[in-house]
Length: 148
Image (cartoon, rainbow, N blue to C red; front, side, top):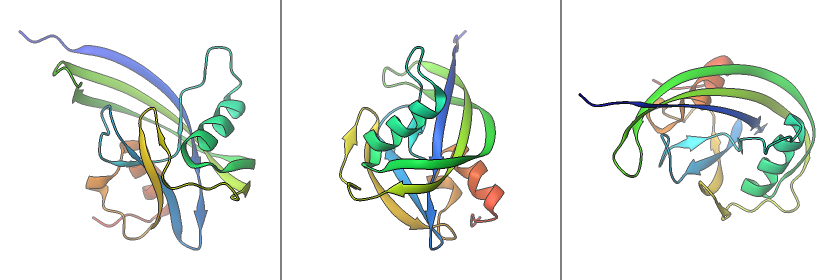
């Protein structure tokens, strides 16, 4: 019988929308490898959630978030195989904040970070669910923006 390793991931993410386009990152590993996701990630031990949010967005996109408002929280059970082939189940809890003001002077679409292969702006109405992480799908559904 195959055992499934279960993990919990609490992440904080930034929703950045301008002129009907959304800023997304492409994941380079984990259950969403090769898919689009929101910029963000896990808080460091003892780190305030909003400090983690601004740090993660800057690390992954170069953007400095200056003000934000809570958008929503979403949770998903995500079965996947890790890079070693082990069967995993991730309980992914995503806290999403809409970024209201930001400094985009240092926006860099070519940033390669820990689990990110760059970022790009995409028309929110042209994103296909099959190419998106579950938290991103939840956000797009909340915006009424995904094609099926």
